[in-house]
Each structure stands twice: as C-alpha cells, then as structure tokens.
Amino acid sequence: MASNSFGNFLKLTTFGESHGVSIGGILDGVPPGIQLDLEKIQKDLDRRKPGQSAIVTQRKESDIVHFKSGIFEGLTTGLPIGFEIHNTDNKSKDYGHIKDVYRPNHSDYTYDQKYGQRDYRGGGRSSARETASWVVAGAIAKQILNDVHFTAYTHAVGDLELQSEDSVDFDVIEKNPVRCPNVMRAIEMEDYIKKIRKEGDTIGGIVKCVISNVPKNLGDPIFEKLHANLGKAMMTINAVKGFDYGSGFEGVSMKGSEHNDLFNVDGTTKTNHSGGIQGGISNGMNINFRVAFKPVATLMQKQKTINKNAQEVEMQGKGRHDPCVVPRAIPVVEAMSALVLADAFLQNKSLN
Image 1 (cartoon, rainbow, N blue to C red):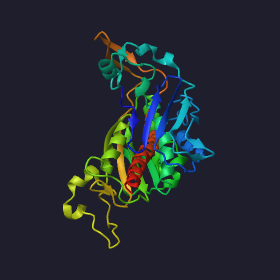
Image 2 (cartoon, rainbow, N blue to C red):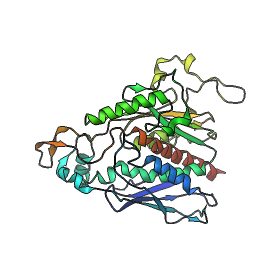
Image 3 (cartoon, rainbow, N blue to C red):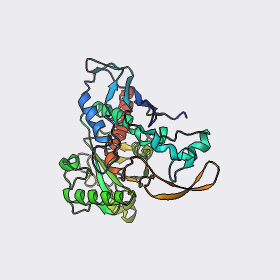
C-alpha cells in the first residue's frame, strides 16, 4: 500500500490503524518561522473526536496530539513536523465476529482481494479514525493561510435540508451537536438522527463549505486545477459519494445568460456561480462547495453477507459507531480544504 501521502509542496504522510497503538503523520514543506497556535490545532482535533455528543460514536478517545519534531519555541523550523495521537479506547473484541466475514459496503472484501489480508479491527487503515491525522495537518495548513477562513457546516441530514429562506448564522455552528447554522433545523436534524439510531440504522447527509478571503491565482492548469484538487481531497474522505462546487449540478438547468458571472470593474463578479474558481484558478471570490456523505455502512441490524469461504451468512454490527457521520466530518472537510489551498499557495511562492 504505497498511497499514504497527500500533496506536492505541502506533503502529508500518515501512519497507523484504528486499533493500533497510535496514529499520526509527518507534514513536510511547512515554511520556517510560522508561529503556531497549538491550542487551535487541538481545538480542531477536539471537534472531530468521538464521544462528544449523544448522536456520534461513544468511543472515548482523548485525541491529544503530541508533536515530535519541526517546532522549536513555538515556531516552525522548516523541517518535517512529526506528530502522534495515541489510541486509548480501542475495543478490538467488538470486531471478533467479523474476522472471516465481509461487511456490506465496507472495504473488507476489496482489501482482502487486493492485499490478501485485512485488519478487521475497526477497519484498520480504512477506518475514519485515520482522518484525525488529517485534521492536525489541516489545522497547521490553516495557520499557513492565516487570513483565509474555512467554514464547513451541516447542510442536510437525509431529506432534512437547509432551505433558501432559512437564516444561516455561522456563530451557532459549534453551539449544536449537528453543526448546522440554523437553530431550528439543527433541532430537527438532531431528533432525526436519534430516531435513526434507535432503529439500529444510519443516515447520510451533505456538508457545505465556504472559504472566504481567498487569494487570487491559486491553482495551476492543466492537471493541478484548484477545483479538481479540492474534489480529490473531498472524495478521499471516508463515506463521501459526491462533490460539487459553485452552481454544481443545479447549474445544468440554467441558461448561459443566467449562469455567467458578469464582472465588476474591480475584477470581482456580480454573481458567483463559478464558486470562486475559473479555469482552475481562484479569482478572489468565496470558494463554496458541497460534499455528499453516504449512510454509515455498519448497522445494528441483521444483514445477509458472505464470508471468506464464499458462503452466505448473517451478521449484525456490534460496538460503537456513528449513526450519521456528517457532524464529525465538518472539521475533516475544512482540514482537507486547507491542505489543498496551502499546497497551491506554496506552489505559487516557489515560482516567485
């Protein structure tokens, strides 16, 4: 398995498994002399950690990040930043029943077919536990782009979706467990997730992300277009099934005369159907995109599946799992966005 690194000028390489001793990473390419706010990094990690509310997995991980290198007296040195997060509440016995069984819609079967083995304890390397390392790296990337603001939030849970007439208040995102910017919709979504959980089922949803105060000229045609790299980053996140930016799929129903973003004399545009990116390059407008997450694959219901001997068997999920991954995915979406933009920013610096 050689694909454990992400990025070009800012490169993250990660290690560890869901039920191993620890997870972590090495972030290479961070410029020297950046004053890092370690509390901000930990705060982003706390937003992702399990056990933070009644609507997420009750695995109790402290998720404290330990930095090993690349920082001296609070400043980055320009050397690789190494970090580690210990696994302290991994109950591997919860997965003994699937040692020889392939869970539907998981990576069990494909990993076994490709590599001839798999870590059945929580999915091993394929677990969303891996994204904790991405959040640490993304929090550092945010501080490289100190003036850029990344705001992701829950736009939909199942069929419950923010409507165009709903007020959106970014200040309430972190004040409800669903991370929705509308209080009334947040209550509806939370109640719905609790109902789904009682049924032993799961539900998906949509995360929307707005990136503001974006520098112009990020992204490089032809094969390093900014929206293409954002799309790859989002599709790398566990359970993601779709990505669109700007007008996205809704743009297909518009006429060109309606869809074109007409210029103001200062180079800004009167509308932003382009989502802040034109020709693969940021134009200084807000970047906005949506990410669709499927329902979590592990159900607390009985399902038919197959085992290693190609026999049909019955299985039921055990252990601690998210009924809806969307609320905890918010900081992951922000982190991967920050890594993409910081990588493009450092690429531009290398050209000057």
